[in-house]
Image (cartoon, rainbow, N blue to C red; front, side, top):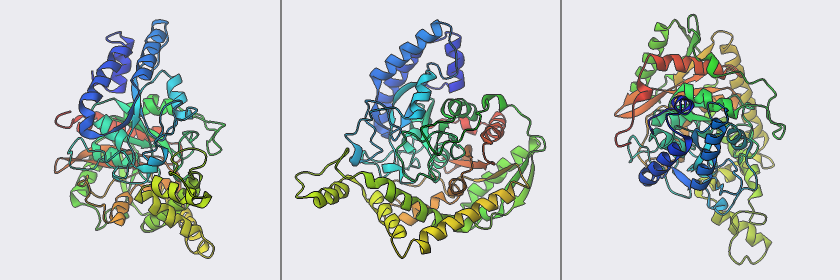
Length: 483
């Protein structure tokens, strides 16, 4: 059962081959047996899962149907779940139980999805390796000595190891797509505003976006269908109709215009990954796509712009964690100032502290114009580059990451080296565009992903291209040894 995709689970439940309760028990047992090797979960919710599974079985018995009805999933541990610890991977929120459900959690629960637990993540979603979590690093099931990518590394590792068929993640600068690439999954960052951020603990409010992680584009379509939609509780949610993503999977790629930016193939890209990217281009050409070289001239400025904007927003968002209202509080504070300083100093880890300091500096008097304002102007130039490119092509294709997964601890002493792993993914967040990573091969036994970008609200186009690619390749079917 653990090898079934979401689509196969939906068919199996509809055909009464097994019940949601039976499937849930199998997967909970598998998590208990295998997750100690991976550390992909922070909290397991066995009682909730079994209650939801029984309810889903009852709904099916009463004639209800639906692709997510009875399907087991997990949530990245920054989606608030009522009465259950929502830690954001941080000591600061280790004792926090959310008093309400995030919109994404509520929508998926209403669709009948079964929540198995909350997955590990980089602290406050800050990281590219899932090593900054208060609960310890997550291991990559393809090589337990390697990172799974971050910050949605727990969700990625759990799905890749077949502990469950799909999970939610969030993407601020590549945090769905990058771990998807490093663990041989399909991961989708929707258009900014497509999925509600209400109840999703904020890192950088103008960049964060929730999305699905699964083994196939077909499964991502199913999960995104349950997540997407307008939410009046979220002022950044966009009131745009949600299409039937599954219905668009089988469109022809004949005449599809694919752009390959020349800037992607610079000295920082592993040449073996470049070869796999071009191999995927050839595969899509066989399906009728037309390929041309394009240019994104301001891409070189993306990393410095992102690492001003994101920390600036983080320093503002994380100011609420002060030891007063909720979360961690230091022991025996001498006065209010001591309470603030020690609660934040003890509650936040080094990476979070680093980004808060950078952000506070960028927003400080005398530096705002030089750093934050300039970064926002670069952001507009990057968006303009994409708008010009999409006048010529339908999608943009390139590598998801410059390198395969690296060894645990290898970049801990050099944060900038880890930041550079996001070079291909952060531009989509700066511009608010949808992006998808799909499996495209292996380097030294480690998975490699190819990234697709599309115009606003064209998630269906991305899923269609990825699905057609997956019908003609088998990279996404490979399973890590031992899982």
